[in-house]
Length: 353
Image 1: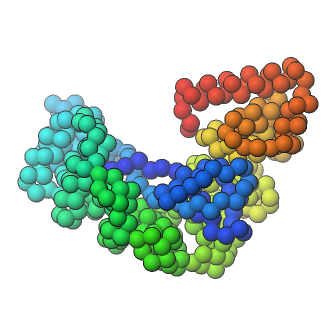
Image 2: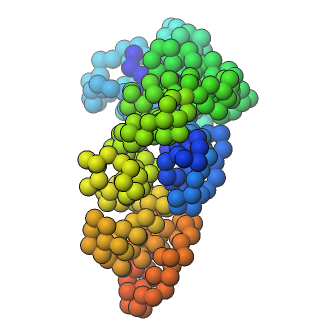
Image 3: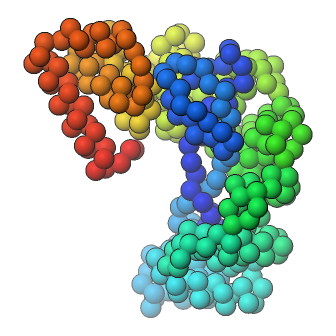
């Protein structure tokens, strides 16, 4: 049976562990807690736990229902992939009645996400619990998330940690990351930076971008491992390459300060622009400086003002750039404001990338 992950991955806050950590970004959502920071201000937010992405199940044949010969719980997954959620639910219930563990997880996901049925976290917890009891690892991981977040069940970090650990022992990358977060925080597990580093590094090596991002901070701060600026830059570069917005911004700043990998210096503009377009206010403000000073691009005061206006609406304070905008001619100011408004309208329609 193919695995469908239960919940969409969300962006993480950078695991800044000391004042010497990498440049902070303006994205600060956190599983435990978070606070908004202006550009380049140091943060102390902890990372948000990974949740698996929500792709379609692999190797699914895109055939019409009448041509699909699937049986058992595979039939439920085929229906699910085709968006026939009620059919998938019925078929999964039949498979669950036959004792198929993965079918329990699929039913739980349908209730957890409200796919074709009213969203019901309590029902999801019940089905994930049954899946876990039957040994289904994705179900075990998902139940851990529900317990960690207190969705459909009382919040219980200790119980969540046990489930993450069970899944992590099978090589589940996201479970290893979440377990590392708990060891880092000392919440549900005793605080243990070395264990945190081991689990987060495993997830990073498996390609989880937010794990790569947080691993960079651990190397920079020397948390659970000896400080190593080169390793910090290397892992931050990897997270940025995967399009992780916070990493793109932080790594661009690192490169601007001359502390990144030399081979990546030509990527500064691309990284800042990508992070800015994805809504990182600090990146938007940095991009204003880049266009104002002509760093890696032609000087363009109107483009600089455009990004400053956008960043200001995102809550970033910068008296230097505001003074620059104040000196613009009325025509250039109008162009910048129009460009900023057009960008905002486009993002509102299309969504952040």
